[in-house]
Image (cartoon, rainbow, N blue to C red):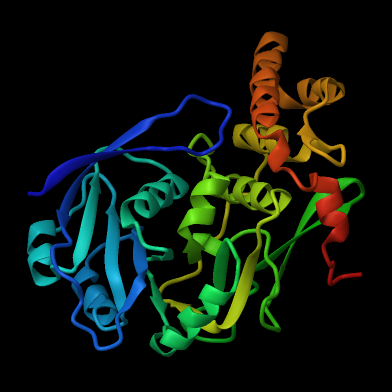
Length: 329
């Protein structure tokens, strides 16, 4: 069946680290392609039904990736060993328990060991013509944390996948736009999809496993990465197409927003380092819905995390958004 492994997240978080166990199956061969990109791996996240898995990997087989990793959720309902024998170049990671998409990416990127990892979902097809040696050469010249593709629905024009943060009446406003030029900056990778620089991803900390709402998990990753001086940009030569309906995010203000707020919006930058001022505690307590002692405990944990990482900050959220180009202005 394979061998058992585990992954310990090294992501910055306000909660204790957890360990996710998984079983590894397959991945014993390299894809037989003429133009294999030896420093680029493909990481596939899975959602929905898996009835078209064979067809999916048939299309993936000749794209040129040196390694393909598929993260499998617990309780898969198909013959994984049969699929593995058909596609021995695919390494299947069978999770022993459920975890967030961001934590799956953390696990997959740690496992991949490649310099670059292209993350997609099983209901998204990378455009074959956009996966080329020339594209990879350009990636090597750039210094980006993540290069995101133009995202297209099954039929029609590109969707608004570039994420821009802005202030509106002193509150946070998120704007989605269609990429209209190369190297436009995005707050985070839309639907997690993009080519990640492994070294930068691990240095930045990856996705916070304690945030289970995908929207706030991506927001936390994006704000942290940008405040720490990293860039997430769109390459218009890179394209990917949904084979099913585009999935929306749950943007409701929930308990995971509170983690995002403390680690990002509440942080201030003094020109040298980041810090979480105690003056923000009352604002947090009055709006969190928590009891006083619970709110104080969570605030102190966040303050400790900010102190630990204070010299990584180049901006705070307000200065970051002021520097960002708002297309609606």
